[in-house]
Image 1 (tube, rainbow, N blue to C red):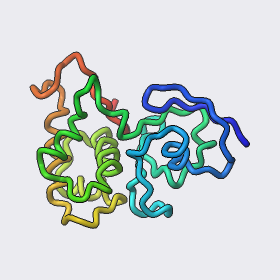
Image 2 (cartoon, rainbow, N blue to C red; image 1 turned 45 degrees about the horizontal axis):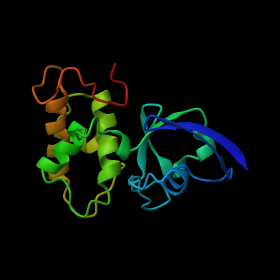
Image 3 (tube, rainbow, N blue to C red; image 1 turned 90 degrees about the vertical axis):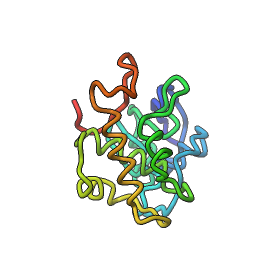
Image 4 (cartoon, rainbow, N blue to C red; image 1 turned 60 degrees about the vertical axis):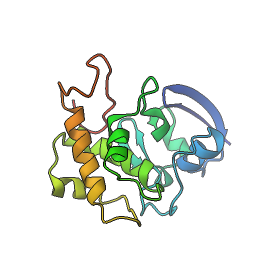
Length: 173
């Protein structure tokens, strides 16, 4: 067994894990973070996307021991004070949810995308989420949702309380 110390959604954890345990299984099975989904176990679908030290990663391609000392944000950790993250709101408002299986990973990837590019055009959104697969849609509503969230998350956007920080991963400084 190996010891892993990690902060997940703002809570510190210290656990013993098998050295070969994937981060997705650690999050789901030991911490109960079941919003992070297991889709393919081959890093092809993106359903397991989380933020690791502020960058999106497919948690099925990261060992839990590799996250030792890191900060992990899951879909359960992006809402603040009972209010959905603007990206979650936009996915709902733009009907970007079908079966919902890809949605947690898609939202986490989209947040990271906006950290790198706060105002993406349609093609940039499509390229930014290309590692996350949706089997139900043609992606049009997902693209619309990401662009809607980008608008809501702009500095000075009326949809946000200016005192509430919005978590954005990626390179946005």
